[in-house]
Image 1 (tube, rainbow, N blue to C red):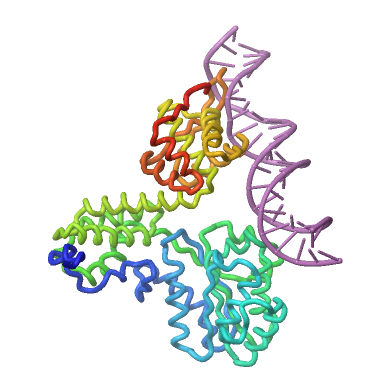
Image 2: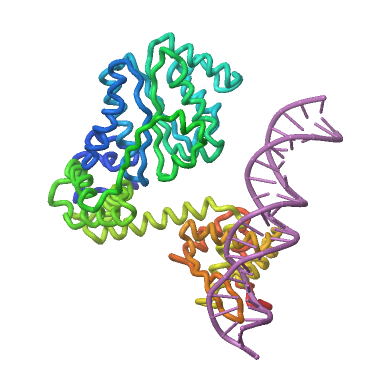
Length: 408
DNA sequence: ACTCCACAGGAAAATTGGGGTA
DNA sequence: TACCCCAATTTTCCTGTGGAGT
């Protein structure tokens, strides 16, 4: 007896495979990004003639196609002149020090075996890289995804260094493509970096729902026969994606999960209902992931807010929350933090969208934030209690020996 | 009109923790 | 091992504030 027997999807057979809707899929056609593509190609065209090209900064929210389009355009460029160009893609969230970036570039350009992961000084790698580039007559394109992280962390030192490579050393023509979702990125730059960076900016505006539909439909048609999905389900995905600041990734994820859910049910057709279910699933996933990565204290604060809400349904204030927080800390055996700190944690939780607060003045009775939980409290509680350090707390709660409201 | 609560949130001092170094 | 350094985190101290009570 094969345990997988019950997952037979006679009802819904896929023509292609689902990877076309996955995050790693790199499409080769980009509806509604023609202008951006041609402008990028324009800016980089001088590389075809072996000349320097301008640097590019791409602005746009998540899921507006910056990264995919960049990968597409750069790969098309290397198709044209494969032996004269090296593209080096770096996500600055993972590599954010001058050193790690330099190692990374040197390895892509000259081959990983020639540079040890550590041990060399930054200067040595730099020299080696510049020499290597001169030697092999290659142009270099450095793609810096999420450049804002780079500037945030070390004030643009890394960027300065990279500019030097593409600037100073004769015989090398290269360019930098910076990708960011921070519209004020350029203003935040160090003046000495800014003056060197003669750049062109390209904006990737959010997709609206019709545009998102144009993105979704071809992909769905590629994997599903017409009568296996409601067109309105596709529109719904597009509409939800459009609400989320025009996020194509979101729309695509929704569609994928909706298909998965439909298959799991062995249903015949992808309907609006499945899209809604998919949205709930994704939301819960995100919430769980957010809570899981919270620091322990933050989780305790979140629990305090939840418990506080159970006692006084609509009047959780900072003071009450930190009172409960102190008790919880005692129960778990963790030394509590100051109220000042709790206040900051509350702001963080609000930024994460787990709670919402309103500043309200209660006249004689002071001025405070009214705190509410957004979303399913029970799920939140469960996820918060998954923390290793909060084990004891969940046991206590299960035994119902719990009393909170004394001396609040 | 004036007071004063219960905080918000800025600034600066203090603590902590990881790493280096003599 | 003892010491120092640096950065991040946290505490301490602070000033500011909307409006119910008086």
